[in-house]
Image (tube, rainbow, N blue to C red; front, side, top):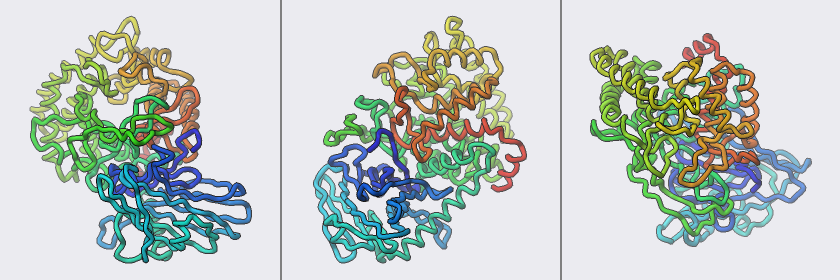
Length: 601
């Protein structure tokens, strides 16, 4: 398994799978992202289930994506005998303009040279491996089913001999072949030709999608890979954006900070949409705004911090005690109790995206009136609640506090609402709201600053520092050259930086002092360094941080301070959106490049 998250992700905006660098499918949920797993070796090496390709020790493997796509290639070679496995989930336009994205995973075996031999170990374990999964060879496919608490089935179609597969016998590859794992039984049996066509169509889909993204003179490869990864974490059916594709990958090995991230956090998703819109991808933004509009039926209904990807409001958390967890880090959790928390920052983050959509696409926003209603509703809620303490961005499970970040984002909510009101010529509203905005700003300036720390601190009346206050500048609350911001950045570096990586905070939370760095915080810090004029230092830190990605340029949520191994759920939307923002800042995009990209849209 290696000592890192050495996985590639494939997906089709309906579900996703993780494939190890030796070509084993170790995580996949079907038919959707948040369904129960059919392969979960990631969370239990013995009983989780996997689909591996085994070769003798004369072979070496190399893994890479087909350039500018989400098709993952694992190449097996011993010099003479070479073959490749192209893993993908089909996604492409149909004739009628809609998308084809079935709950399927395709493994296309491409013959290259010699007489390569391998065996496959096809070992699905349905329903989180709770009960027994039985395998039957039928005329057209291999069926797997479980009769545990729930009945479920999976179908494997293949060009290889089905009995040879089930008996794990050796196969000599002489021509291209395939496996198709489908949640549904096919009406027409696939063939090598039809699978090859799906492969090409999927490739073209991704090439077209990424072609909308502007080119940057630095870090272009990393920006594109991150953008493709964020797209994979979006769920077409509802417009939701997931925080990550996994559950229960621990923030620290052997500890209990293991959460299910296969949900749509308003904060993470809105930040993703903001970045992806900047890259010119309007459809994701449109779908996401519709997701939000559908969720807010009543004008005074408070937003939850997170929802299920199909708009579920109740995300009951329970644990799967039969699974040993990633590297024995129990518990494995499904669902997330944090949905009940109160976090006042989400209104500002959502309002920021709504404002951005008005600025970018002001004339063709089809739901202007709904968005105006939501804007007024947000102001109403923020005005009523901004003085109250909350759980903050890090979801402390302890007592509520007056977190600086939450207050700043309440200011952002009002600030962006005023800007939207002005775009819509609703000046009477804008003028009324300016009073609230001023009041919040004064409150923060007098309560969040500490002379002792010489910085804005994590919460009112405490000396603790927190990486999230670095966002005061990018959100426009304070100028980068303001001496108070500069000294905050310097204080955070002194207190929270550890060997080039950042703590979110150092005060003990509900689970003690974290021993891993929250990846997004280091990106935020690099941005801040850049903004206060320390450009060389920022670039050096960024290059170092990029070197900690896995072999495919992917990041999880956390990085271990000492070993630099990736930890936490994977791949993490947060980390990749921050990578893109930082890379764009460091690339110094010139104005004519911005013009080019807006023409492309």
